[in-house]
Amino acid sequence: METFDVVVAGAGAAGMMCAAQAGQRGRRVLILDHAKAPGEKIRISGGGRCNFTNLDTGPQNFISENPRFCISALRRYTQHDFTALVKRYGVAFHEKTLGQLFCDGSSKEIVALLLAEMDRGGVELRLQTAIERIERTEAGFRLLAGGREIACESLVIATGGKSIPKMGATGFGYEVARQFGLRVTETRPALVPLTFDVSLLERTKPLAGVAVDPAQVAAGKTRFSEALLFTHRGLSGPAILQASSYWREGQEIEVTLAPGHDLFAELRAARTARPKAAPATVLSEILPKRLAQFVAETHAPRGNMADQSDKTLRALAEAVNAWRVKPVGSEGYRTAEVTLGGVDTRDLDSRTLTAREVPGLYFIGEVVDVTGWLGGYNFQWAWSSGWSAGQVA
Image 1: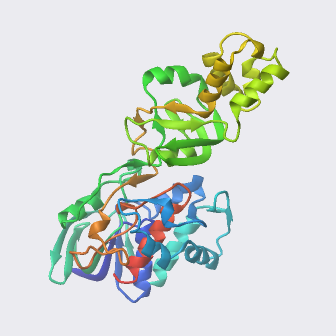
Image 2 (image 1 turned 45 degrees about the vertical axis):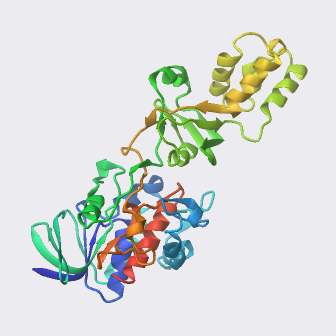
Image 3 (image 1 turned 60 degrees about the vertical axis):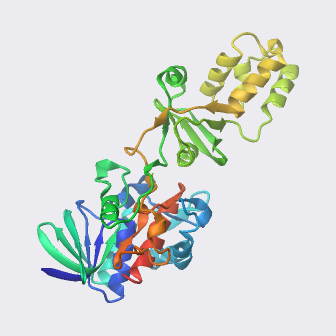
């Protein structure tokens, strides 16, 4: 039987960070993953450039049944700490917008950085190795992985959530949690496009590919102002992905397509100043042309501006800046960037990420019920939670 101090399940962002930290403390570390390559989600993120953190990271950017749980890890290892590590390795990066930091070159540089950090700690990496069995022992844990028996003192679960199953994502981490008596909150796709029912799609089909930037999207009391995209299935774009984490089936979202415009007042002024102009022409100076035509044909199908009553102009304004629409669902885990929910934080220590009732068992990264907004926040949770566990595992 092989023996290690620490076994990390999952060679993603959180797992590699944790393994590197534990190895650099002098622990003998093995990291396992069933994939062919480490850090696959890192590699594809940010269009291949990896939005690796956000300068504005704080607990307000995360969703959890316990919103305070993430505070300890985020304070112990901050966005500035990870940015300093990126600089140390000479990886060029830039701030794109809203505090989002991206590699100038390739996301592969972040993967290479983590592999180099693991190398510094003498970490052993085994790929295409699935964990078949986990048992608790007096000294820690015994695993069967890739046909080999492995013993360890500490076991770190960093296997992520269910998002993007084509990359091998599974609910394995939740199964391990339940095996050892930890609770798991409801899980659902997050940061995901929303879909319309057939009748609404028939009407909005001409808008597929139309982008509005910025738009505002509100789900409940939470509102985001970013780009929006009409698709063949419904709505996407950053504003929609953000709102999707707060939206639930049966609820409406409210969309503002021309934020900053008092559209009713502007349309009334245009009726006086340009009575012969078509409503679509006036709207196209504020909205993309296809969207302007769609709104005008739906709410003011006849006549020029002079022919439109206040009631019609108000309907046009509300269709643009108070559009209430009820999505029928989301595109699911297939395209979701992350999984909302996960291992219940009530059963974890917020400083070390260890299971309160199972000494030596840790859960980090996306598998935990801590979900960040779009924009590098989920990577920062991976770095922070991985670092925190790596200090003690």
